[in-house]
Amino acid sequence: MQERENKYAFIVEKSANKVQIKDAIEKKFDVVVSKVATNVDGKLKQMTTKSNGRTIRTQGRRSSYKTTIITLQDGYSNDFVSGEVES
Image (tube, rainbow, N blue to C red):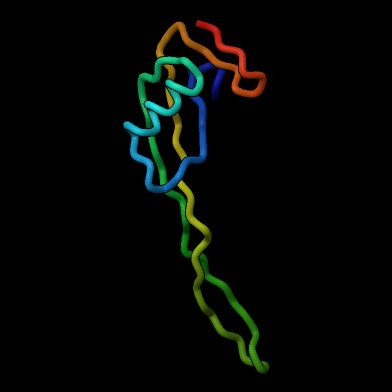
């Protein structure tokens, strides 16, 4: 995804909004962000447990987190692993 479309994914704090995410990425990596897309994950899952010989169906929630996909402007790329920036 990152080399072909110039998009990068991050896990961010749930309370952060798109403007805060964009500002933080631009300051930290010295790039220009053109688009920010966010998604909050945390699903309800069905579980079957046995208790005293009885089978009980119940549901639980996975831990939730917020992911974001940022798109850099044309002409900018970044190698986040080694920290090298090309502009």
